Image 1 (spheres, rainbow, N blue to C red):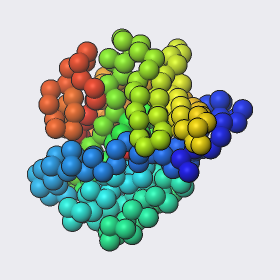
Image 2 (cartoon, helix red, strand yellow):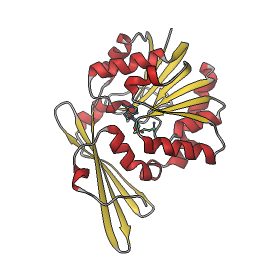
Image 3 (cartoon, rainbow, N blue to C red):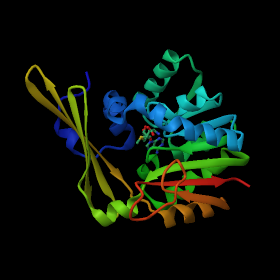
Length: 263
Ligand SMILES: C[S@@+](CC[C@H](N)C(=O)[O-])C[C@H]1O[C@@H](n2cnc3c(N)ncnc32)[C@H](O)[C@@H]1O
């Protein structure tokens, strides 16, 4: 079953763990899990080849799409996430695909303590960093990511381009139909923070059931990301507008992608 019936508590912003535990059952359908493999594999293949990546930490792994993709490319992967329900799905996908992935239940703030070892790459994809709700915490998170990297290792980040989102102030971000469910992702704009809502509408026995999940996001923009990375000790940084590393255009690009290297 994709949905829980809406309760009053569903309308109060949840922390990241509760929010993702709630949307985990429908996450793969909503994000087109299968199609993403076809779309994103070539870029990750290039990244793995170019930087000689043999080990990687997937921070904010979700249901494990990037972890699985990297494992398919021969990389030893550790997935970390704050949501137990998401990590369950990483494990079941890995079993089904005959891939080995280590999973760690931890907050970005604690990866330095909770995840052993260092890696050739740390990746944080799919806007996971927007869940970090202050500048100080963002610096701590980047510092932790730095501590998890081998010398010469890369940090690869994909966020939404909030410069564009904040300028346009579109409330409805996307409407997606998957099977019997329609997912509406929408924002409520506040000063400094956003309410991120996912409304799922499911037709069942002729009745439409709904569930609403809400969490807070901090819309971090390019200059802040770069300054927090610099504070964390990253020197070499490249910016792009997508994972294909095309030019970042503040009012056009959908994503903000950053590739930084530990010297
Ligand atoms: C939008 S999903 C992206 C998942 C995946 N990277 C993808 O691209 O499909 C964000 C993920 O980050 C996790 N997350 C959010 N805040 C976190 C935190 N502070 N520490 C660890 N994981 C976090 C959530 O539980 C969720 O699985």
